[in-house]
Length: 325
Image 1: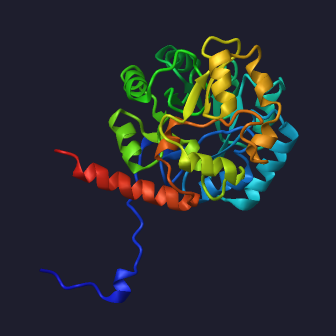
Image 2: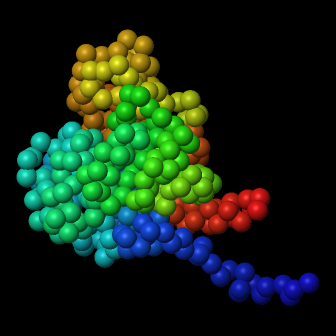
Image 3: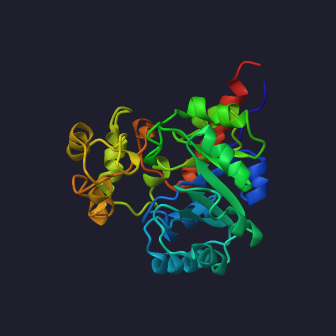
């Protein structure tokens, strides 16, 4: 039997061992965790916290506010010296010069989403950028490989935000894609902790993307009403809307408004986002739609991004060590 630790040694904090993958090496990050590119939310305050915690912070463009995005990128460079990237949400960015915009900001890593990967991948890679494309299906993944992407973000239907109306769960989609591609895969949809990260790695992923978990973090700029709603949510407290169109499908927090939309439908789903600022930052969850993933049902508290990442890696190692050999 070993000697008991001294009180001083008992207080020593041991960081979990790093998890190195092709993605951490490719992106130069310490932890294989990427932040979702949430419109208006994924800006310097939150994204710098992610990068400083060892993950990959992402600045959004889906708001379409490129002047504001430019300023947020400048702020990022003062808040962190760690790697970060930009998402190009093709369906929402109307500026035809978006590729040159990204290049001009000195960005080295781009995620592209909500559109054809053939549109920008070649131009981005010719400029020396690393490109990952977000896909909701095997067909989308193969199209992105044909376009020449460096990696894929494979997003199951559990995740919050805009979705493929023919959604496929992460447990099915991630291994399906991994069986058909050689590029590294980031698992998205349903990821919130070390247990879900270990599951994603078992399915073939080499990094995970967190949305709702980071949305509910201490550094997230959204109103506390939204964070509290996530903490109180059951696993059934999100709804899948607009499956039949027109426009994109999406997963959102269950409210009186989204229950009504689910039952009655709407002519224009984008019209429901007219009061986004009131929802996200004013805390009026009935003023519009609060995009939220099913994993809200597993989130029970607000923690700093650094603590979330630290606990995720520690739990990941613990889960892996206890798996049957």
